[in-house]
Length: 190
Ligand SMILES: O=C(O)CCC(=O)C(=O)O
Image 1 (cartoon, protein in one colour):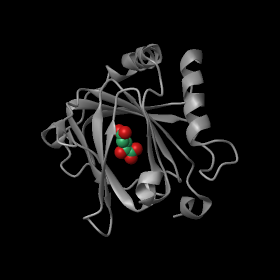
Image 2 (tube, rainbow, N blue to C red):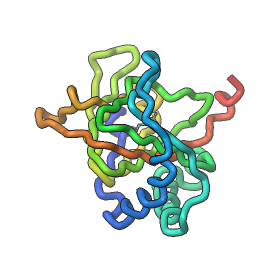
Image 3 (cartoon, protein in one colour):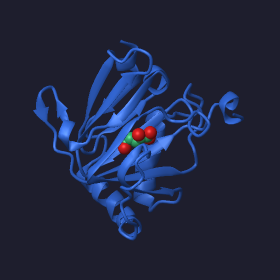
Image 4 (spheres, protein in one colour):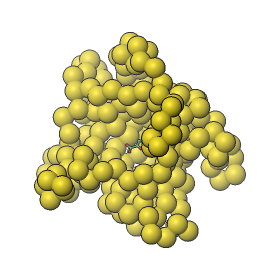
């Protein structure tokens, strides 16, 4: 299936030391914020978030590796946005199915997964029987593009439905560092 080709999970993309360093930089910023649970129509429940464009040098090197892998210069995915989006999901948090708005994000979504494993569910927008569950282990990088990004919704499952191939995947607090590509020129004007 094209969706499998377009949703890559690279386990152990970063070392434990790199994970610790990224979290050490992010923690002081994140811990000042409250998790948001209340909006019933939000796509995300139990989250806090920030954006970051300047990183400690050792963390910048990790981000550069993510971009080199997911968004190489001159590649079909386009140029990366200048900042990373940091999404901190509480243990009880989840992300409901959605397709990222083309106005804000181009062809590629690359996510570095810190602190906890989780299950991401991709479901075809027009044929709900087409489903792909992806296990996102702690310290993996996933790269979503093409069919997976445009034709499937994606969701991060809450703990009540967080299973992969029959085995429970306990989602603890999870921090994702997301590098996206710039919107395609034809989409940016909408
Ligand atoms: O937390 C994640 O890895 C998923 C983030 C997400 O849903 C998105 O970037 O659209």
